[in-house]
Length: 248
Image 1 (tube, one colour):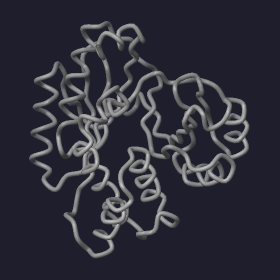
Image 2 (image 1 turned 60 degrees about the vertical axis):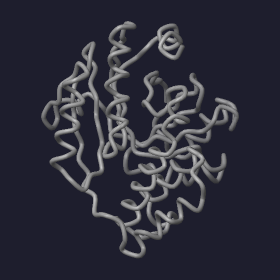
Image 3 (image 1 turned 120 degrees about the vertical axis):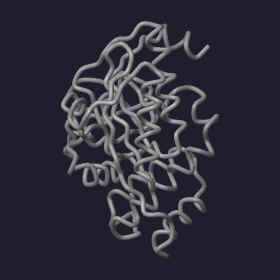
């Protein structure tokens, strides 16, 4: 197992979590409720719900909020949301995948297309972008959870496909259908992960200069600000030097 992925979801950018915590909790709650409705309202018996709860915990969402979101599903409350995936292109030849949960398809479709067009991008049809990504499982541990060697050995034993410990976290990649089982095995060895989720991993990345990077982040920020948008993935790679300038 080898390889690494330097690009990050917008949720990982410095400061984004603090500025948008309330909106983030709302989106996390929505995913928990939808996940609980899709199967049993028990994280131990429902892999998608387990991943949603772990994602919420990794963002320090209060336990009471998590339980309320699960209880909504158990009580038949909450709107019925439709999952819609958009594929598009951003500045510098970047490819983006936008996952949404919506109770109004027309509203979401209009908003997503408008955001792309106003920020140097355009929406493509189904399959125009996803062919350049692998849909995989991603399990993340904090850097201080264990040494890179320990993480690698545990991941290999659990049946993971790939490990990257070069960044600020340990990233463990699995086959889509193996995420739940690998995550459970790793939890027995390493403790509960920071997150375990389905993930669109780019096969190749596009390196951006400062101008295109700035435009791209405006596009992603605008998408992230939309209530219906859950997650944005991309195939961009930005140098540490440019990131420091953008975060300044």
